[in-house]
Length: 261
Image 1 (cartoon, one colour):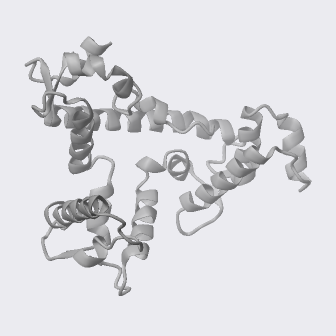
Image 2 (cartoon, rainbow, N blue to C red):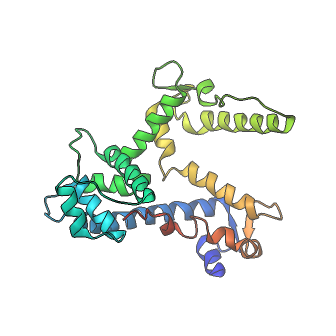
Image 3 (cartoon, one colour):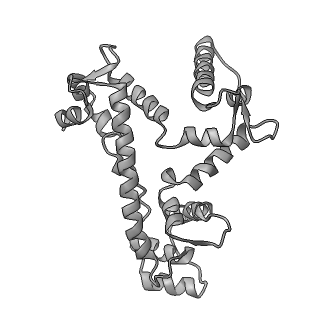
């Protein structure tokens, strides 16, 4: 597997994997994951849309979800129809509540509490949803925007959580964090370099297919196993850290597909 990994990622066939090659691989796998998600979504949507009207209600989904967890589908459907209490374990109840929150987030305006196929994709795979991306951007801006103009200045973007630094090492880490965030703000996110990050710029930056994000992830992965510090990975390094790479989303994106249904 590891030799095959090197051959597939080592695009220039020089026997080592650079950050740029790793970035390309990550972006290809992200696109592949998206296409798989779309196919899976079509099948899942038809499975939970028994009347074929092109819309799924929360109750329709809830019945199928609980059936997939071993509950009797007919009994669950009957109880929901009669508005009776569902006797489910605490863990399942927590999952249902979390899913319901995500359900309403996926329901694009005007909210009708019904999900069409596109909205259902947002529900099952929020990581590939433009609507969910906008939602996350709004949450980030809401948390960091101190003057309420729905934009971020550099000082707002790098504002650290409240707390005290206990020692010099922690201070150094904080200083490094600030420097990295400053560079990220100025060189990557602020596309027009006007010292203001808009929601549109932040949305572009947070897109899963953003090249910078993929490159940053590639560099982080290489740093873990790059023992000879040449900023590349050789086969020996990949073999030595095979457990790390096997468990990463680089090696198995499909494992990150949501398992709720």
